[in-house]
Image (cartoon, rainbow, N blue to C red):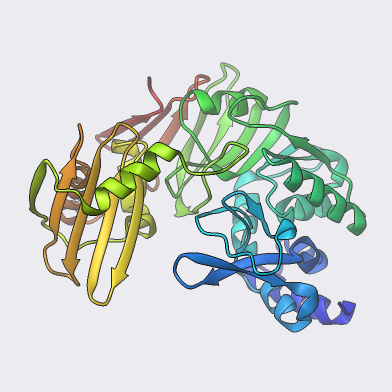
Length: 385
């Protein structure tokens, strides 16, 4: 691709996603983002994905790479770089090039400093690693991902740009090598034991910026000498993919539960109080549901004016709500928990109080990964066994 072609677009992108005096303006304007995403996936209908190849259409490539949007690079277990023409994978995205404005947002929350060892947790396409390498010097930057192809390809592409940070392939919920003064996670981390290795890798006095899996809560904090991280839930939000195992495929038991929930007569049947909602995209509702009922997975679809939401939980609980547009839904629930009822309790609180207590809450994270949240009289704990 012609250098003049992408440089102009990169400068425009930098003007859009940073302030003129921001120290992240130059990295966004300088890094050739298109080189990090030579191929990507786009929706092809509701269930499948179609491959896009930048070299075959340079104008579409530069349009996609320098728009403020995420580009999906892996669906299920198939990375776009490794796909064959005509492949149409089904399923959920498992890796991406995160939209630049969100990358900048997380970097700002991380408060990176000159000379401080920095961990980018969740390499993806390597955009955040590239921006940090440009700003801090690659010798201070480590990038970690569970997928060896992701770390390998990002390393090669950044090297061609002249950046040589350290890349590590590891499951961060099991082990994080090294010690860092700053950690920024662009995957949704689990509360509880899976968070312990990340916290252990943060130096006392260091800062972390992260989200918790299945929530859109950005939690930032400083690690105290006793190992406790003290901070807050920021008042902006971010949605990242949940930290995954290497295969990234859905658990078979949940797939079976989704199939059951799609058609079964529930043990509890009745009418819901509120319209059917796309829980995954109702960010505060989704986050509060994870706080109160951790582990719930969701699906949502429309057919004409009919809206259907399905909730499932690894303990075998499920719920299905179906309605015509905004009419009260018919609700079926099964298993040990009533998931739609749990969601409606949250919506009751939102309607009664006008807001939920999540954003701006104090956060305290113990070395064992338990996250304590509080705001006013409200308190909650995530990850407690």
